[in-house]
Length: 294
Length: 193
Image (cartoon, rainbow over all chains, first blue to last red; front, side, top):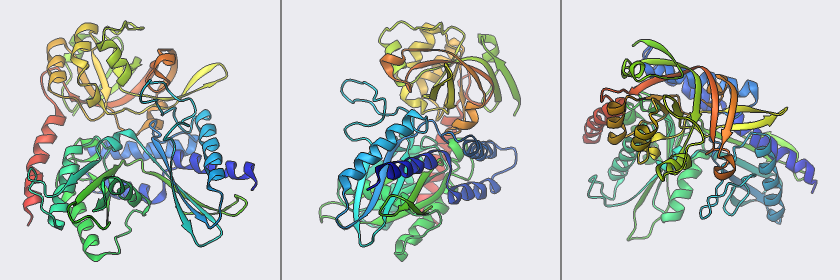
């Protein structure tokens, strides 16, 4: 294992994620802008957002100062040394923090002390899956605190919002979460929703939806239909970009389901801001870049 | 909707002239301050800077040290509602005139804005590279050791930062208005076609 090679390319993944908004996200923002009235606040916000993406890319600086919690999703071949991968990734995160691609964004929850390198108990976040191939699949999502704070988990039935244990109840939960969030998740963003699972897997799986591209529909027909319905419904709320009014409250909605315990019916809604920093790369056995995934 | 340029120091009279919806270009000195600084002031901590007639920007910038100087790489607004608990007292005691952030603030802050002469400006959340270009220089930094770089108080000299008035000194809040109107829309949407 050529450590320097791996670290260099993991660093490159972080740099690119922080500074270079993915093409599918930028295209969705452009489409949203076309639907807003000229000279409206919504148009001003979306234009600023697009200018911001261009400036960050050109200057090689973070798209957003809140570089978030770094969530790494690894797909590794059988027998691969994941401990070494964690160590190399931590080293790349530490370097990316020194270079200003990642903000010092990690606090000790008890003492309040700030970690200089973002390397701490629970930071960054790692998820592993084993894959039947020789390459290592590394995907990174940088998720800011604003969007994380407006995430919501419902336990159905929910009398307060009249949500029953069916897809109509799920729809009510999602719309309620979008309404509660207003502009605080930095709208227009992307929703990741998990129906079912337990308290933990609900959130994990809802966030895994962010690995899907914009416009990529659920393969489950009923869920694909619900995704479309949510997007259509949210246009009518007039919350708009940054919650200042307008049509673009959401760029996309991703919904999936896990099995559940008979007594439990969770609907977990995670938000991702418009600064949807998600990149991925396939690395060869020596850590060389085979290809970019987004 | 009019565009208004304002510059530090901000007078109560100038601030009272602004209305919800006004587009602002703000220049001069701005202090960043977020969660820890607000709690610190609220708990009676002494401010390391003179806040009177100033602006507090809810922002934890990305700043690096280059050639002996601080350089701001990214400086967008953070969610303001987290400072709701502390802000009325800070407006009253420190006579700040401008708050810049995102997402708006609650009833108590809106009342304090009316009472003491202060406005809330919304900047575009996430537009961190865009806003960083409007930062001419860093004049100083305080409490960085105690709070870390994101929560420190940065003295930023800014030129033509764009924002919109969403809470004015006359009791109007765009956030409140949209929250209420979208609640009505939500009911219609839930009822379905």
